[in-house]
Length: 474
Image 1 (cartoon, rainbow, N blue to C red):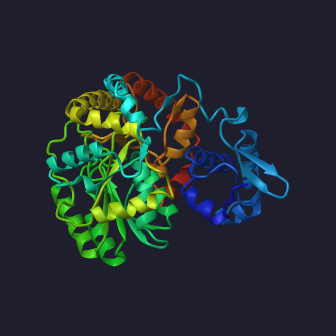
Image 2: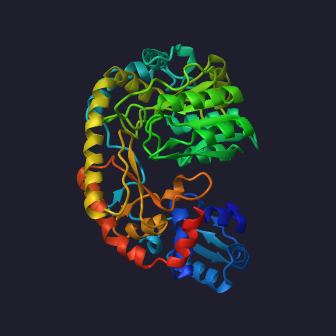
Image 3: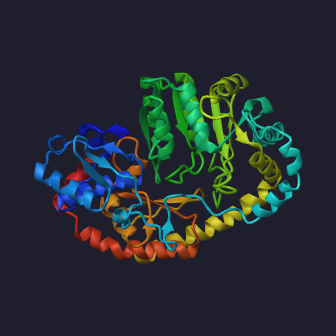
């Protein structure tokens, strides 16, 4: 057994779970969803039935029935002396919620298929393999050629950069973890958008940060009043922002939003981490604002080729002041020894072709977005679908707060999605569902057909009084 989850911690993770009857199955499904999202790890001891019943205000009989349901589907196992312990997914008993069918549509990963020209570039780089094999095979800072190419791209975009201000990482997530470990101390405040990229929030929490959420909506963008108050009152150590095609809302900061937030960060002495991983995914944005925070001294930028080229090409980077790059280099050995030179050579060859790659991606994403929007309008007209000018997903508003129940139900149809609360910093978003449009139009239509089939059943199982109560507090 790796860890034990307290009743208080589980209650916080569950959020507004009780939106349908019977209550015991709603609770069981909410715990299943936490397991599917990896928010509860395998081999974690759940709270005792009596303890959880008190924390949730339920009868012990209800919690006992929930745990029995979880045992029946292979999600937990009861061990004498250890209580109820979560299991690794994929066992035969849990197959109904861990879809491995090759026909399943996985929309949990918002990444498109590889750029069509990637295989050719790999073959081209393979021709130089002998020179690569003469080297160690990895580099803790990054190959000079790739760092120079990335520095040149930033300079051309209006952010003057030297190669010494660039570090190559194993993808953007590796960059976030490294930055969190170096820049965050236990108890430090980190300002973060809500909803947000969940793995970034997890990285900062693991480093000991206390997260301060600033709302972002598809209609109104960033809540500037809340942002200014948070910067001035909390004085966060870090702020993690995605100004271009924010994940999951798809919003882009206006010039006014950029200036207001940059000014507030400067006055608070906050280091801003700008996640640029989606910034190139422009479909039809009317105006492309300039890069965020050029006037700030303490802006750290993260990029990668995961969304533009291929998610399997695990190459990202950090652009920061040279003194911070040196600190990150010294700290990196505790995490990993560097980035493989083969992948770096491929990316260095790809970067001059980025305009071609971005144009192909824009066309692909446009087709997926338009197919999803059209299917949602026809099949689920009561849902509210924003217009996304780029990025990877639609942040859809449902006509009932049943995102978690819907995600569980549609898994039985072979469609894998992440519920709205997965992207929350401090609870809520049961009325939202992230629908990535990175899949093919055909798969997106199939997925939305499945959502339309199960939605009436999910609504029919909801408890109206409980939904009204939940709506009042979200």
